[in-house]
Length: 279
Length: 268
Image (tube, rainbow over all chains, first blue to last red; front, side, top):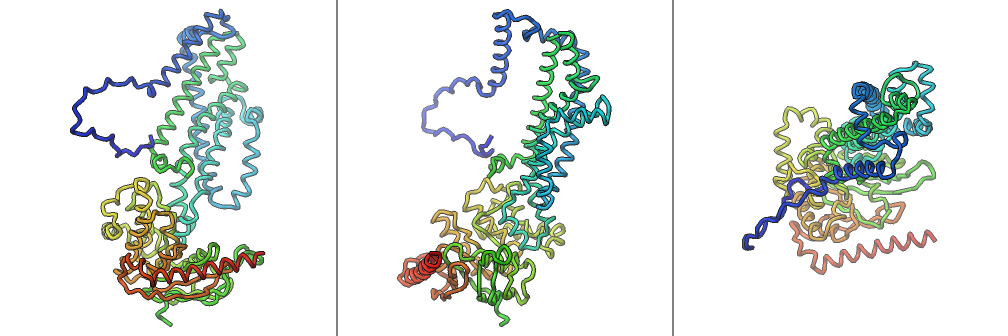
């Protein structure tokens, strides 16, 4: 990924006698994620049969697949519900985190004042906030959305503020000597510079947003994967519990991949220039 | 009196309020229009402070600085700056990096949109001058260190500054690239009427490029000696291998070594 796009592999020297082209290698690296995933499920399936584990302890992947097919309408409704609360909370975290990050990175006074508060706030386990949210907003979508928002918010703020705070002093000198105002420095340098940090933080934030919404669903909700899993657990329907887990993993991976793709598309220059590695 | 582009008169600059570090004290010097001056001295002598004073990034507590007939009380936009770190923005092409100052300086930013082609042409011409013709659409990370520093010079020159301040711009380059860029700067100075002030640790660089060399004392910095460089222009790199050149470098070295020793003794 770090090789410049214009570097081509060296051309073979013309004098060399043409050798038959080497047989195409199997793309092991590209196939690795699939191979490892398949291996995990194969080992899982084999272990369950080998050790004769009862279904209520650890269902085999084939049983989970059966449960997914059997309960598909329920699973689908609840997956969409969880995805919806997660994405709404995530969108709020992006808007709020970006705004607060810019504010905190803008002024040393605001930074100094707000930073300890944010650290303290971030240290609170979000599961402890859910009961309060339920008192305020009742059982339903709102606590799940807000929990997702609260948990995903912090990494975005910190990353955006870091991008702004690490402007090279020489760069600022060059611009200020030309008569640039703080606003100019922010628009020309600070904000573009913080974008790789921002898009990088989205991958972390979306994963955390799922954690937030599912926590809230398991405590106080009438729908969503968290609620479904809790209900299935109370009926000892362990394959359905695991089906919920699998769906959460799929949603999480899909959203992570989407964020990684957005990051790559918007701030590819940061990977090329090495800035994303903190240079 | 009017021919001085920069006049620094008995300036004190202290960082961090009363009781803070006194960076320069009793600093007095003047630079004529079109002149090429260099500032050398032991490390930590306030050379970079001098740059920030002249560009108006710092305002001294004592004394006055006049640039182009006006006392400096805020950043002066007739100055271009280049540092050792090229600080090109990685999300802009080389050409857009060079055009950046035009988006800042008041008298250009109003005209930029309507006269883009004219400015782009000027930037292309500058790129050609420094030997980067055709590299305008490359990104900084596709350029070598020496090429980035060339682009940095273009960025410092695009708004046609009267004064070019260079803070060790060639410090991080290999010896041959450095010599090439010395020649680029020499030719730029020859072809335009820009006034250049170079802050450097490299004494050969100072002697090769400058008309006059200021030697600064250890902190708090002040000018302890001024050398006029006798070599005629245009100078060839060969001038560095003459006895006169070596003698002047040797003198400078002696003065700076002594300033360092005095500082160490004072510290004990």
